[in-house]
Amino acid sequence: MFSVAQAVAWVRSTASVIEDNAAALTRLDAAIGDGDHGTNMNRGFKAAVQRLDGLEAEDFSGLFKAVGMALIGKVGGASGPLYGSLFLGMAKELGDVGEVEDQRLAAALRAGYDSVVARGKAQLEDKTMLDAWHPALVTLDAALAGGKELGPALDEAAASAEAGMKATIPMIARKGRASYLGERSRDHQDPGATSTHLILKTLADVVNGR
Amino acid sequence: MKKLINAVDDFVRESLEGMRKAHGDLIDVNYDPFVVYRVDAPRQGKVGVISGGGSGHEPMHGGFVGKGMLDAACPGEVFTSPTPDQMDWATKKVDGGAGVLHIVKNYSGDVMNFEMAADLGREADIEVQSVVVDDDVAVKDSLYTQGRRGVGGTVLLEKIVGAKAEEGGDLQSVADLARDVNANVRSMGLALTSCTVPAAGSPTFELGDDEVEIGIGIHGEPGRERIKMEGADQLTDRLAKPVIEDLGLSSGDQVLLFVNSMGGTPLAELYVVYRRVAQLLDEGGVQVARHLIGPIITSLEMQGASVTILRLDDEKTRLWDAPVHTPALRWGV
Image (tube, rainbow over all chains, first blue to last red; front, side, top):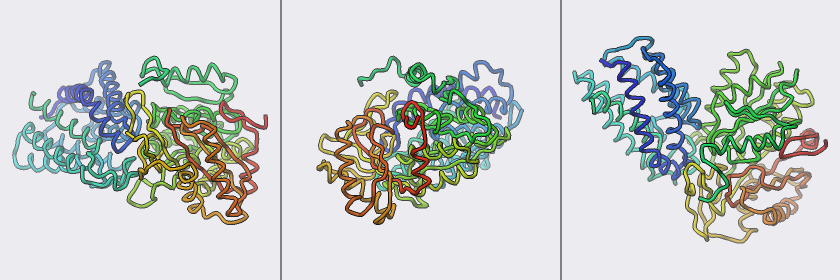
């Protein structure tokens, strides 16, 4: 089971993980983008946490909608609409309940992913966050279907996200500002795939009580 | 990092505060969310024209708000696209019942944020059309990239389209003209130095003393090619020739030549660049009928320049000459 309390802990914990990694994310972005991914994500998740401070979050819909709108309003760049759409997609999928079965969380992540695809119109291997999301979701579904508990299943998913993140290194970017570099975008890790790995890793940590 | 800023988090707001104090006769500023808007907005019956983009490109876009150009501009954080709530606020502020045109530079973030804002505007029964500017010939336009970036052509488009809206053009004709301008303008730029985004604190990319980055965008993002320093004429040719070729200019054409500083390159050097491009055009029988020279679309303190050429026709020339009264561009008033 996955609860709203865990979801709140996930968002809060993500905010501090992003803060700790902001400089590293920005360095990755400076290499193939415009050097603001860490700064923007940090500003956005801080705003999301502020939004939560004034919110009695009792259901997923209210919680994730607040987070999504905060990200859309404060992150800017492409990451704002993309991560905002992720949380709005999850809010819509889960609705106004306070606790769901493990598979419903997986379905919500999938719905969030679909919203990101719809907004960004990228494809796999374009060297974007999708390259970390997609393998993680496939792994999560398979692990849950195989009878794994949510905690271990999310650990496996986070490991797949990490592998997907690293797999962006040799890719040539075909979306976003990195695509302007053409061949020169090779040999750099995608910043969006990196923040996606952090977000999923944090979810696994929270659910596993770490 | 040595910059005239008090605190990184206050930079954009304090810059806007100064702009409002200086130009309060032309513009007003909303601080939450950030929007620079015409002091007399909304103008009843006039198509509203708005644009937006990251801060750090001043005077673009806030400096182009006023009579005969933009009705509002949405400044994002430095080099970061503005957010949908800004464009939504601006759209509602400037709508005078004739609809609103969004001028969007072709960067993935800008396009997505403006799309979300256009959806919000339509939900409020405001007719919104969007035009995406993509004039940068340094980027290959293919199915496999984001497509060309919006750079120098944006300001020429905003001036000409703003004049059309000012004289009463309806939304469709204003949007059509915007697409027509975009189809007839091309740009390319180079960097001699990088620039430092205040929040990052160190230069966006490293460039050796003897190196030049060719084909840069306007966000300090690296270009497609890094070469050894050359003479001004050779470097200018690397910008101007692809632009001229891509536009398919031929003898007898009339153009507007725009030589832009990325922020740190002085006017004296821009004239050296202008001289060479004018020479090339002259050799090809192309007449430079209008010009614009200066730091118009900057990348903070970056040294470098861009060359933009717009193919003119009678209507575009007339609309370029039409009165404009904004903080950055002013003539005919």
